[in-house]
Length: 103
Image (tube, one colour):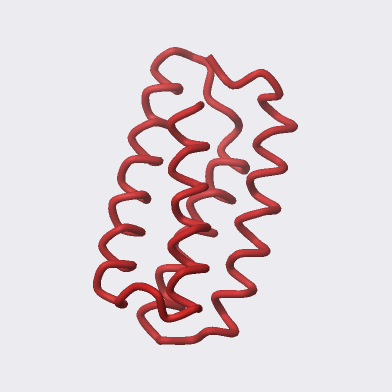
């Protein structure tokens, strides 16, 4: 679960930096693509250990990352703000489902 949290923090940071024009779009997109892959793989590992959160929470987290990625692809700063809100909500829900981390 720590790995997932770390990637989600990275996603938030990259989105904020892109909005501030501190990093190029290509770098931001590659980072979010990698984050999506790593988060998905971490959820699969948790599922194999029978400690994964419900698919609703998983879909919420991955959906928020994909939303941010699509906003970046469209250079839509307003959509980035909405995506960051959705990501924060998904992180809170995930923390409620796995308060000590899903292990």
